[in-house]
Length: 431
Length: 198
Image (cartoon, rainbow over all chains, first blue to last red; front, side, top):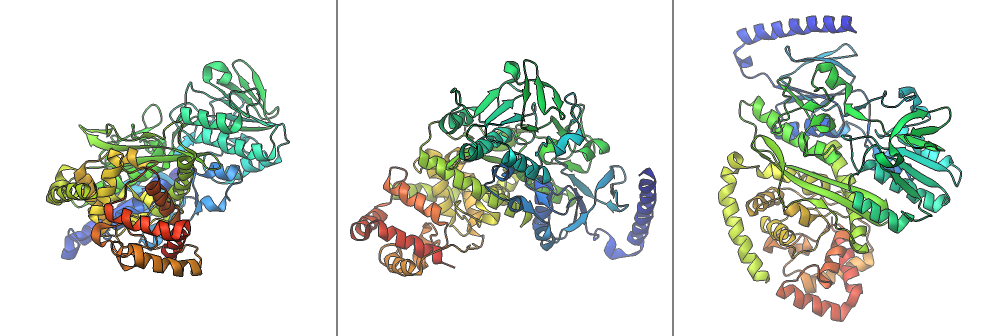
């Protein structure tokens, strides 16, 4: 790999010399060369940024580099697991981006030279940039539990990126006998999609209630509380007998038996600090950090996430590289698909302005996140954010959760809006 | 109350327009604000459904009126009340400016041709005066009905008939008249007419 890298760096330095001499002799090239943006990663953040840069300034050349031919969303993948929607319905290609004039390269980025401003790929190609946007998503801490590693996922999938593992988990739940146990192990904070593990429990419970009513779901949490907890708890009580002797869902907080020390693939057990629990299906969602390339490039801090300036999402470590989405430290914005899309639009506007020699405009951000607990029972959380005194801040008085004790009519509307959210955000990103 | 809202919005509108030039330096631009809505309301405000309404082509004042109503709670909502509280009147005006200039792409929706035909007649009789051109015009700052997502229109009718939203004087009169004569079947026919719109 180092050999490829060296060869590419030579090639690039040759290219930039040629460009320099062209600039010296051909007057139209002075200040006239198209600005180049390379986007690393074709998920919600990367794809949205690529599209919106082209919309904001069609003169900018945008190249998006992504190893996969198609992208599966993580959001709504819980409805695939419950059998409520198909895996194909959460799969998106890049033809829409191509129509907006984005050059899409199917390859994996191996290095970014922040000094020379060149992205290189495993395929041996190099891409010079004026500004680079890195949207690498998350990677997983495979050493988190004893007996746990990446080779386990064929039997104990995390299914935290939509895709093949989503289908594995769905098929396992479908093949489980009535009276079986599903064990879900959510990660400690921070992680992608905070309400996701609890929506997953809800969706699996929805399937089990209809098909295997004697079965159980045990959530062994690595935390003391979780996102939308009050609303989930209320929904579980209503639909799944939560906190009764017949409860389909049991939630163990980290101090009440949830804390996990080891996983056994051979025995299909999860060893907690108090009990070892046997599962017919086990879903471990491992602890997370920024996508691997962020670390390779040196964009991460000691905790494995990427510090950025909230106004531009430019890395505070490497100039001219912007980091967006789950990998970025953008708190109080959560690690969600909607936040990634919102960050992408802010970063796109900043990049276009900065490339033009101007200042980044004043940003505005939104997060909206839905969970579906049961048929006709949707819940949401939302927030509006502003940029003040060098920081991203919540706009006081805005946002928050769906009200507790909401009417059936409003819960049903929220389910319809959840599905509309899915259709619209994916079309905004990939259409 | 309708006129009061209208007057208030007009004042907001004027201040919004005055501010919009300077807004790029002081706060987020109309585009930046409009873009944040796309995840729920569709790219440039044309929603892919099944329920979240289109915003594209709405008049600026209509957007301001709705957002103001969500913010002060006079219009019922699931999530919009929480979101509207994050913005100022000036920002509502900028959002309205953004969506007013977007072209609406209408999706195909299922409808019953016979009911749609009846709905066309009812629309002409009871609604066309304010919701002009078969409900496709944003003039008079009325909501665009033609091609709007039917579940959303159903929610809106339900809110009007419950305590979720107040009708203006003229609308109240027309609605009462129609309800008396046509009942729920009248609303069903109207929904099919709006679903038919291309």
